[in-house]
Image 1: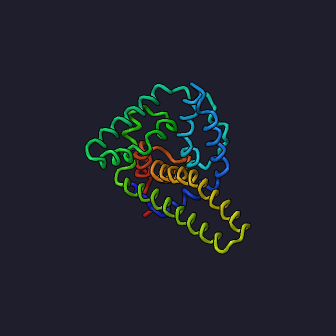
Image 2: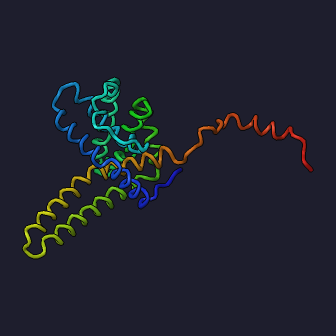
Image 3: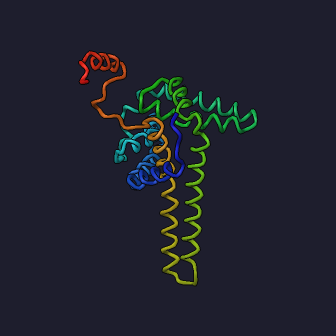
Length: 229
């Protein structure tokens, strides 16, 4: 079972966010501008949920990808998945709030798996639960620590550029604070991408690797070779 490294996850998430900073911001803007359009908004919502998967693969995001018709292909199953997730989370919340939080992190990767690997809703939920087992609190800590760091950075920049009464410094400070706040969206998506990358792809397997089923045959062939001794 893969164990997440919290600091490594944050570092990887920030790196992925920096790579796609402008692309993600533009994608979010496009989504907000078109979310009111019926039917189209279903596809764009599903596409937005696939952002972590695309970032995890190292792809540079093209903001217009959210309009691709392929994301509307499985909208019925997407609605089923969301209904199952939301229903279970609310039931968990009704039993003391904490169970709902645990369920939400158990199914943290379900939507990404549904889109990226074309899994059935129940299969995506099961696989997400398997991948996140033992890592729920690590995912939570990574997100909270990143959010805390961003809040501290905003507070420090705001304080530094408001020392004295220099108008130009205040303007620069406001701009930097705005950029940091905007960066929070790509950064949090980047952490989700880093979690998916670490848990769903725990090790890079060479394309020439043979399936495990071929191993016995290979062992048998080796055993049939005459000994060199």
